[in-house]
Length: 325
Image 1 (cartoon, rainbow, N blue to C red):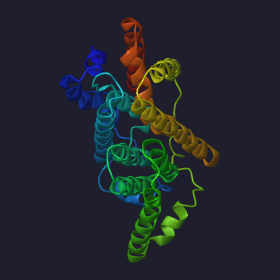
Image 2: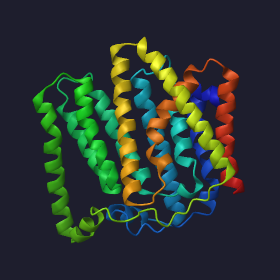
Image 3: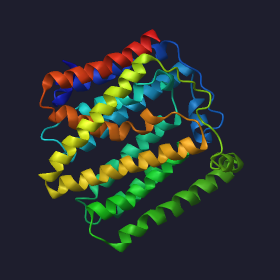
Image 4: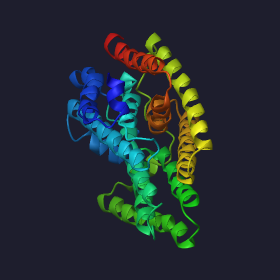
């Protein structure tokens, strides 16, 4: 029933989204985990100290729901599927809620919101002439994301990727990100000197710390079931995308190619994080590409019973882990 609502653009799915979020996050909201993010971004630490742990957890869930809705809107407006659907929002919410130890306000939760807002700007450049404003805004949003989670700065490369894939070459548009860097950096350095926190930020950008070192994830059998289902869904989704790609419009191919680079850069971020630390952030960093990949399978699945089986196995395994382990 849940899957049926979200495969369409039935507004019931939109109403249910925060309710499902609360269902996943209820134990965390009632008994929030206090995580020491002492090595995280100074800006994130300031946000974290704005309220109590319960307040921070509620804000994290709110940011995730908002991010899911924005991502869903971006995908629907670009007509990746034959009809509007709320599935990307649901899959994003599930991905960000899958690991109960990560049900906290973390740097990636906020950084992902800036990624998604930047994606929205980048997809707009397809129809904008000129698109300097969209390129500038996307770059600044990516930079803001990096202020919360440093490795996410790699996503800035998507600005040039989008220009290459979605636009004819115009050299003025290609230099806009450099101006965004300079302007953003100048304002930011002046602000740091003004409040005398420059040294704290220099330590943060050294990237020699483990921001999640205090989070210990208890691996239980529901995790292995969830991982197995996700791997199968990704394989099936890849097949569906390849099949659609061969008989699709140029616009569709460009967008799929763009999302391929999102996946590549997400893997690069995960590799960077694993090299410098022991952070286990696969589900958080991979939430955006997974939202698209898994939606492809559920949207084009020919065997309804099998898609229902995969979905509810994934859904129930998360709930079992959250409430029983």
